[in-house]
Image 1 (cartoon, helix red, strand yellow):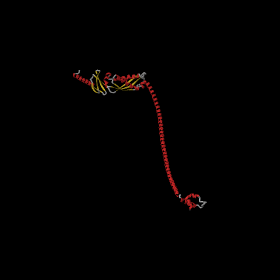
Image 2: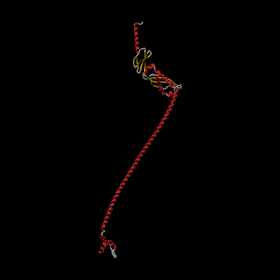
Image 3: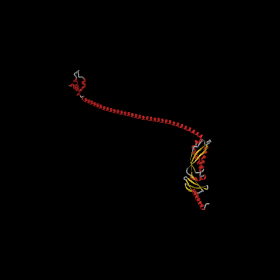
Length: 346
């Protein structure tokens, strides 16, 4: 039977152990990006703690870490029955979401710490089945698969907003579903044929493009040659016009020079004629003056004495003189009356 001292020592040891265990359970850490929420006797407390070290009532108060930053929930192996009765599986759907800090306490109080199970995991299963049941395998697997992530994000966000959960759906990534092997082979064959057809179409498009490029290049070359021909023709025309103008100018200059030369010759001829006329006129005036002077001189010489002298000289030059009954009257008429008297007196 233990002694009293041993009992006291054991009690002290047990007390110290209980104290240490209680102290260690009361002291806890809240990581960054999370808040601490507390339950006392199963009732959620209003107290919320931020990241760091905190204390709680040992043995009676429970704490949980609730994340309010971005997190990714991955929903796996989602069965889906299409409208045609084919069952397919989505291996993985990732939902990027965030719980607003202002709604955190209310959401945890209503839906628990695992609120995302209700509003994300279970909701994804529901929406996937709704989508598959109203669409065929072709639509789910091929035609409308690219719109599935947007449709899921909208459906989840609408429900979260309607119930004021404070959950924000940031993005959803959906993997390609698994379909039966026989169907998959058929799709692969179809895709292979489509790929071959696409390759053939692309090759045809490439050939058409090359032909079109050749035609375009030929057209461009023809247009360039035509433009070059037009430019050369215009250049030649301008050169021809310039040459024509130059020739016309030269011809006009030559004509003007010839006209000027003719005008100069005409002027020279007029001047020569005027000089000649003036000279001839001077000669004529001189001759006329000489004739007039000679006439005046002769007129002055026609005196009775000079006439007698001339008569006598003329008579003296005659070798023969014939006299009739009387002196020829011509001489008497020529001498005049006074001269006749003198003649007879002599």
